Figure 1: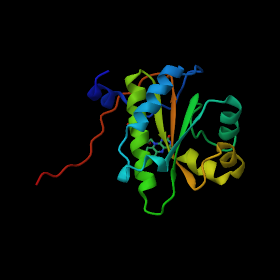
Figure 2: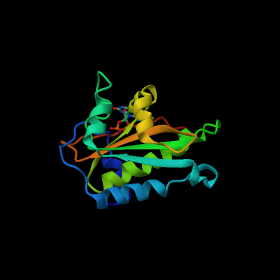
Figure 3: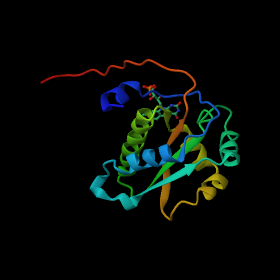
Length: 162
Ligand SMILES: Cc1cc2nc3c(=O)[nH]c(=O)nc-3n(C[C@H](O)[C@H](O)[C@H](O)COP(=O)(O)O)c2cc1C
């Protein structure tokens, strides 16, 4: 899929089929995330966790009274070293955005997730299971899977030309 088509087609998918994505697609999506720009080029300050284990996914979704990742069969957690300068959030968003576009280009549904991060941080038993490298914190979640349905979007943001 051409880039501009993927940009137009990407949407926050909140309904997934009960079908796992292929390892090949997962690899391409992770690779796309790794090609994102990172402040000062500090790729060593970033970490990616792929959760496909159904027991762990159920454990996470069972912690909230509302859906936090919509039963996406693949939940990617992007973590970063918390160095206090705020770049962790910006860097993680860049990685996530590349993943979302790559997933779309592969014909998959995806979603940027913030709520799941708060939930994970609140539950030490889950955080411990992620086994993140020392000094890293989870920053952004990305849900990926086969979309159950389509969605048309046409967002606008105000622009000034000067
Ligand atoms: C920083 C950020 C955090 C978000 N967190 C969530 C979330 O926790 N749960 C959710 O359902 N959608 C979340 N979204 C998705 C937005 O609601 C969505 O991108 C927006 O409504 C536009 O819709 P679209 O992605 O379909 O174009 C988040 C998006 C961004 C950029």
